[in-house]
Amino acid sequence: MRLHPSEMYFYHSSAQPIDKQTKAYAKTLTKFVNEIDVINEPITATQWDQILRKLDLRAKDLLNRSHPDYQNQIAGKDWDDEGWLNILVRFPHLIKSPIAIFKNKAILCRTPSDILKLD
Image 1 (cartoon, rainbow, N blue to C red):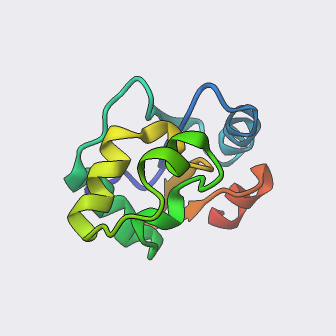
Image 2: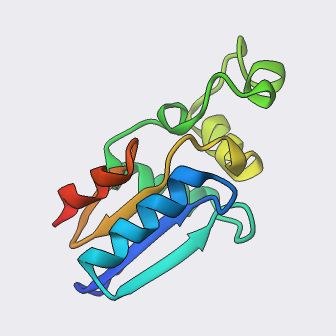
């Protein structure tokens, strides 16, 4: 994944209020924010793998485990790494927080101000 040094990649769900707040913080760090709405712009398994490597997290670390879709379709089953990547592809609405990549660093923004750690 090649990134321009002054461009931020912001992976989010437009339906989540925290994501809108975090996006506002992102725009204070750089005027070049490349917004990717994971609900409307599908992310491939390979792209998710690259994002996870930058975050140094596992796919299941990104998911909202209290969501009914997680409880009904994912919880209690054995998944390998590829299976977890496919879950991210198929259920992007389960991602619990926005993800920002800036200056070759990445963060899962659990609170809107977490994005400021990338500065």
